[in-house]
Image 1: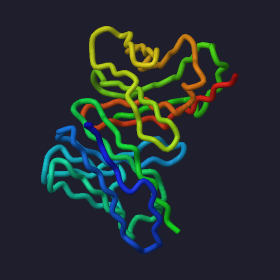
Image 2: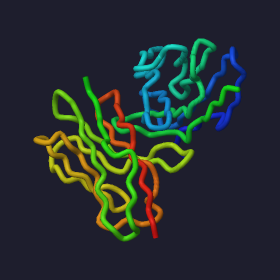
Image 3: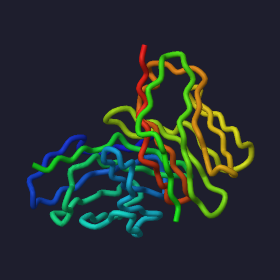
Length: 109
Length: 110
């Protein structure tokens, strides 16, 4: 089936550790996105990529990094520099319409 | 800069009653407009979209929305709400970068 797979679904991290969230798609979409969701704030754009080997910062990129080495994959690293990393993270692809994965919930202990 | 405002943080509607969720946008040109729905702990699903043409847009699950340029609005409506419609609803705008409102949580009472 075509779709977007995010893993892990739940992740716990100690302060000071980096963590990488996986996003894989088989929709053959060029564009991929990472959004962060916090209660009452909607979705905020972290990074996006229009094509392989290219990506741009979104509105809240500080403390995050990404790579786009393959069309199918757009992993997000939450670094120790991110001051408040506990959140729900959503990966999406687009062909003019956004398609979302099921999300990854990160909790910092 | 683009922005989206959803004035209502939450709304409670009785099952079978009509529903209207408000969305106001700020955009320099003719906007692309979207409504998405999210069940708890899940991703977002597209309900409907407006790019151009007829200002009344039909979507899935019996939802519709009307684009009103004069009011910068794109309100979502449903004539009769079902208990399964309880979820969070997000309005979005933009071309390549979609900007979302803060969301409206819908509660449905029996």
